[in-house]
Every structure is written in C-alpha cells, then in structure tokens.
Image (cartoon, rainbow, N blue to C red; front, side):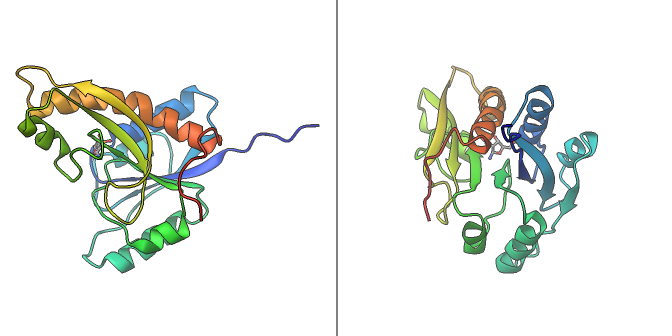
Length: 197
Ligand code: GRF
C-alpha cells in the first residue's frame, strides 16, 4: 500500500483586499492541491478577512503596534505548525525571527519584475519610469525586502493611457493565475530551489 499524499498546511498573511487569498482558496477548492490554507493572519481588520470567513478558515488579527520583534513573535506563534507562509499583500516587514523559524518557507508576491521597482509603490514607479512592460514576481522572502530568490515571474505590458488602477488590475490578473499554482507547486515539492539552511 502506498502512502496517502500529505496536504501541507499553509498560512496566508494579508493587509488589504485579499484578492490573492481569495484565488488561493478558490484554487484549493477546485483542484486536488498539495496545500490547505489553515490560518489567515492580518495586521489590521483587513477587508480580505471576508474570504477566510467565507471558506471557514480560522483567521486572527495581530494588530501592528510598532514593535516589530514582538509582532513577529506573535505572528510566528500563531502560524507554528504551518509548512508554508504565503504573504499576499501583507504590508509589514517581519523580523529575522520569521526567517529563522520558517527557513526557505516564506514566499511573497510583488507587482513588478524584480529587481526592478522594489518597495511599496511598484506600480506607480513602473508607470513613472515610462517603461513599456512590468509584471509580477513571486520570490522567497529573505531579510532584505523584495530581494529573495525569484521563483516565478510574468510580464505585463504597460499600455498607452494606463493609470495606476488599470495597470494594477492587469497585473492582478496574472497574480491570480500564477500565485495559487506556484504555492501548489511548492507544497507538492515540485519547486525545490531556494534557500538552503
Ligand atoms: C498585490 O498586487 C501584490 O502584488 C502586492 O499587494 C497586492 C495585494 O493585493 N504585494 P490583494 O490584497 O491580494 O488583492
């Protein structure tokens, strides 16, 4: 008798609308995924928590107090036992403790083709730079922000007349397609590159 495939419990961390969380949950419910969202963490009463409620996933608000060390410890304690930590529009920078406790197991999605346009205003920055394409990057999280090893990227064209909203909407179509598939591939062990410890 073969072993039953295991399903990896994952934590999703959000701060905003949670459209990527929604897609990760939808994908889980429509595919035979190697992951299962077991907890959603937000640093504020984020709109996206509605998706956790809708899918019956436990959620916790860990309010940001300005104390990064204490905040990180509480988040890590809440998600202990998860195999993967998926940042999906999470607007806080965790301290090194998170990397130590989940080595090579924290991933983030960023709305540009890193290393171009790191930081919190990547869509605005790409528009302001006058480039004709930007995109999406999914990467492993390391201590330096938006700098970890890249797992997957998708290009998105910048069209004449684009606004931040229209461009971000086009980027998010790609995010929603890519992120659940990449999370599933990681959970299934189909992507093994990354940080070794
Ligand atoms: C995404 O564009 C992601 O790339 C960035 O924050 C946004 C989150 O969107 N890090 P949502 O909350 O998943 O809708």
